[in-house]
Length: 142
Image 1: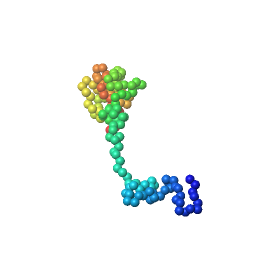
Image 2: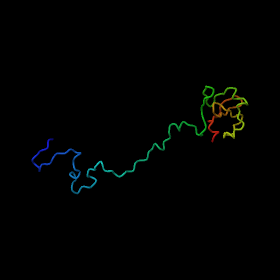
Image 3: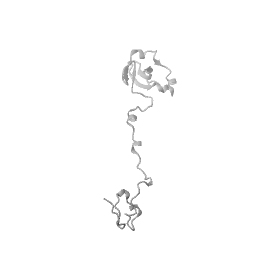
Image 4: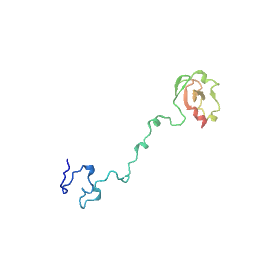
């Protein structure tokens, strides 16, 4: 709208951003009804707690319960999982770990022994060579 010149009594139209917030104040109206200046800082209100903090991460849900336990690993360009049979060479005395305590490994179960494959410690059965458990080689350093 064009501004009128010559009549000082007539109010000049203003856009909402140019209006004086005290013009809209009604006598007796509470102060909170007065429009706030967006440049003023408002007191921080309490926010709801972040529910994602307590939600388990998808990666955590898939990891084994023990920190060094692994469910699958690679050795000799092949993937092994719990229950798989290992090659004959890993069943031999050459790969058998007799000092499992020094490597921070639990005692082998009956009719089984620890062996070393692809950087991991693997508990296998004595007869069939089936994988019972596997631990990351990092357990040795802790």
